[in-house]
Length: 604
Image 1 (spheres, rainbow, N blue to C red):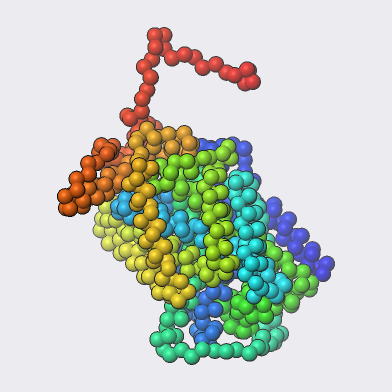
Image 2: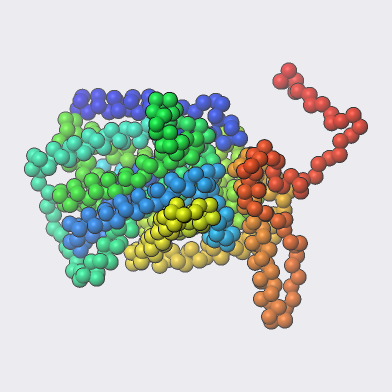
């Protein structure tokens, strides 16, 4: 016991020493609370990293009832390939769309405003269900400690709401503080997982017997087996939202080189191309996404192998899959009971913290939606720490309602969670393809466009596969919810609440959201483009009614022209003013010039 306690103390101290600390000068850059590499790894990666606790369990649960668990490696290969393809796509895209927005910005720039609106709606659904699934998965791990995985639904609901409340509180406290907490937990998780891996290897070499219990397998023919293999593969891909999260949240990252790049530029100048690739805020984002390339495939293979070997799955002996393996692995280490309890409690905290990724991206998305007219303006409020507290709180309330609706059942929320992210990834693939076709020639153009197109097509296949693979568990309902959300978003946009004039857009972006620079210019351009789309929809509606003899005049004049993206962003002249400057009213200077500003008595 003393050995286990000492080991945990060492792990906590090491993780805390390595955790990022927000500097005062970074806390108020545009009011954003800018973060560096370690904090970005924590906040934008925690959702992806903690899929370790539930993705493999969901995958094996699709195979085990049909006695197909020995073929789990096929699903693992599919997951690993998809992780690599989509990971490289997003790493490349950060060089193009390095001011935030992810596929939202990409689809607006290279595809169409209508598709951008759909992407925005799908992402909001995905972020909400990320919070739901992560929190309830944390509850599953907590109940595994008491062998009460199958306890009544009301316990799952109550504990789930408690975990979401903690996550909500940490999020509104600001990015700097929450990133330090999450990074510390991730550090301890990595160190303890290494110990767990050692314990599982020892258990195998010592001949620990697989768990024996009565199985009731269902028969499956070849086509049914293929369907269940598809379902297993799709369930293991639920956490790729981390890619979009980092791309969307790059606006909150410091625009500076992290330590390794600074060292490499001085000590290994021959690798200048590599260091440039990982330079600046795009480089920080790419480093986070580099860790995604092999993590999913590696951890899924690791857990699937020992799950099959020891014959344990979600629900076995009242524990989750990871809970069962932790019980077996840590039992081989002195003080294993202490380590097992600590690991499960840590899993609860991490899975609750995974909601922070979604909360961060909800903030990064919703203020843009407000500027474009897709969400009412009242949603935008930013406190002194840079947090959009109203966005976070509204999401918190919606998550509680959904948790009650699905009765605290994690699996019931998974179909809605995993499906949404692949539609935005598909949009990103085709947007990158169009960018390459416009800016490159020769072999780079041919191979680059083919690779991006392949990523887009693969994501489309996975998007459909997610719906088909989860059809019996509610995948078909996603089609209905998806259609309803898109319809509602368009209705809000064409309603009076969706109208945005240039002065209003400028106020929302520059004053209420307190965003400046290239990021602000992008959103202003996007907002003008969305107003052009809104006007075209209103014209189409009016023409439709004219077919039946009903003439409805357009209430609003033609919106301001958005123009070219590069011109709006001022690529050649970054010091140029906002493209909305021409629409603002500037008071005429009085005789003698503008009055001098005087400091307040407190400042004196």
